[in-house]
Image (cartoon, rainbow, N blue to C red; front, side, top):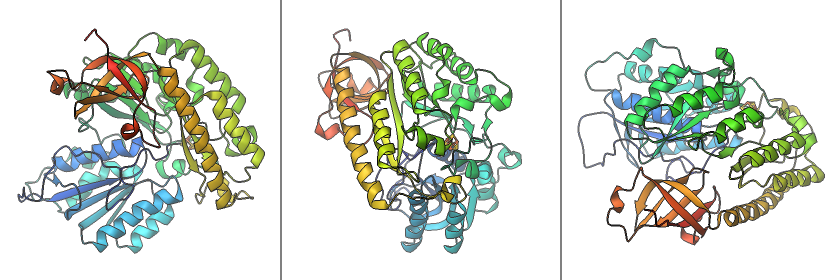
Length: 478
Ligand code: SF4
């Protein structure tokens, strides 16, 4: 399941992710184009969808505003993975309206029936489900929200959820590429199959075309993103779809790294691990959702693995790819979760030696099987368990930092500021290093450099949540 990632405080959507726009306009830079803003909540899939929507809306002649400015159109890409996540999208709309910052509001994304009702009550003009997202540009165009000359979009006739495409991700050196949507698994707690529909894969040719565009725009790393990546290709009759896709993307001129976002444990067969080991371009970073480490809770969740089989697969990953970094999602307080089951869950996390836990308390999603389960865990117990899980998470992160001490990593530089550069290493950690003595430091972005890790990132660069952050030194070779 895709739970919300790192959030960035924003005055309106207090948990909306601030995706850097392609074109930033200040209030002073006025022209007669209609204006738009985007607020994004939730996972990488939503971030990708916002980027694709942004490109389509800007193509229609809009200019994008950032910050607390009134816009003609505000698109809120909402998440409903937890009840709190759903409320955040609705609250953002309410605050926009109260402050008079939105001419028209369009809410899209994962929307539960309750979220849709709340939007209707607020008088939101457009509420568009995930499966109709590709129709948004036509909707916006048809609503005469634009002021430039008419241009009929091909998208108006299309019915594919993958017809929204990206070519750029501002301020990033890696680009996300969405290849899969929907899910048929119906894990008992999850609302995704209800709000994103059936499992569907995007054809390799289409993915490749997008990858070429991204590579032409300077991206050297692609992050393959989908709701249930392990299922990629099954609906297209492809076997080993994920490997096929990774191999194809690797062949795109200019692409030097291919990374997977969240992926299910069952993809890690011997064949898959050997495939990853066959080429340095396949990043050895894996986010594998565990959800619970208790055998009995996993059964009630209707997950496709047991805690035992999960740990066996993790051991197998580590034996073939000893440098691999593995992170996970951990749900706390699933209905009926006893103290013993919770303890077992933490023990599994410790045994798996995850580098990072994305911890979140269970919340009821109406319509799911778990919503009808008895023995809900009281809120106070959930809070206490989340705190205990966070303690373990701190220890795991410290261990992970120590594991990398004196190791050499390849860092793709994403940002250079105040004499320091930072970017992701192939194994997924954010690495900072001093470049103040380099004469050409402004040209480092998009370069991959050799760095030796000296330790955990110092206080200012270390977040309390999020993946591990390290510091290092450039090797002499450069
Ligand atoms: S139903 Fe299960 S596999 Fe599908 S998106 Fe939800 S958590 Fe993931």
